[in-house]
Length: 214
Image (cartoon, rainbow, N blue to C red):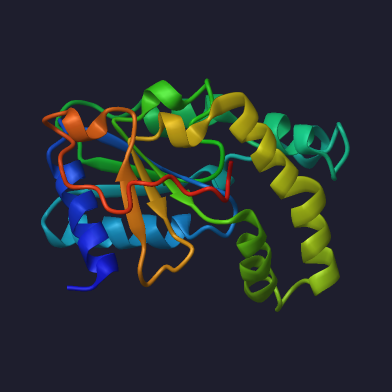
């Protein structure tokens, strides 16, 4: 079993032991690997017979006029004005009823005060912020120049992540932190007392917190 397989097995067991419906957040910086991890987890759960709904915060954006009212290249506009959390709650989080399956939502800023108490299990995908820039350059190369990507990251997304860490301490709020600098060999730690909870059990790997996002 590879390290990533072991991680996914831990996550599957954590979700299976929750009372359903289960709302699962996969948070982390842009280009950290959130969507990939959420998709892999969803596929494994479906393979074990669990009905899974997948959603992403990026489907719940405010209109551009609101998103960029404070300026396009500011941390505040990215953190405060990008996503419509009320609509996410109304259309995705609130409709779940007892007996429903698993909802997995990926996206940035999912452990902010407006959302942190909505999750039965929260996973934070931690990556060195400079590493996300290089990943983004590769990912967005078909549509953007390196200079454009680097500007968006260094003037908007990364300052917004630093603001998020200062305001909300997401790695302290998450139940599980996945250290994903090497996606093939991730490490993970239980946070927020999760390892002592009967419904969120498992051994932790690499107990030192990642320094990259601090």
